[in-house]
Length: 149
Image (cartoon, rainbow, N blue to C red; front, side, top):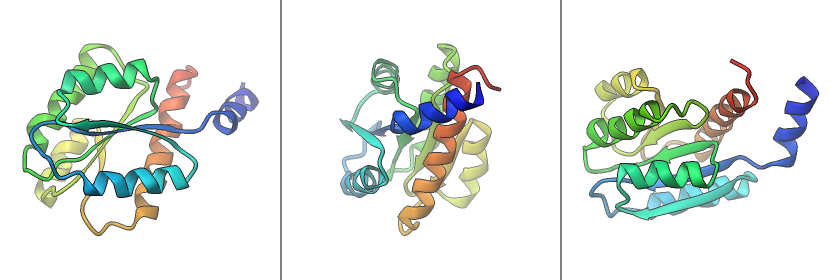
């Protein structure tokens, strides 16, 4: 089974959904991330501006993504990111990783981690750090899809 999972990782690129849920129209950083992920060989989807948490989850499920990458710059991350994490749990979805980013105070990062939202990188984080984190989380998500725990 290990060989089968290794070939799955090689044959199917990591699929990432970028989303700016809530009221935040600053999406320039999302395009920078999209390019970095694409250049790293990932398939990238962008949910557009202002999707609802339900739209984010529906898109992620319909598109069979490995990772949902959220970004907010307006200070609503504890509320909006939590809503998305709660929807994933409510729907029993354990095989999609959830990562965050934006202008997130250091004091809020442990709270987000406790919700299952990792990364939480801010402006100025090296793109290689974010790509590495997304790759690690996608690997974990794919293992769950294959039945590994």
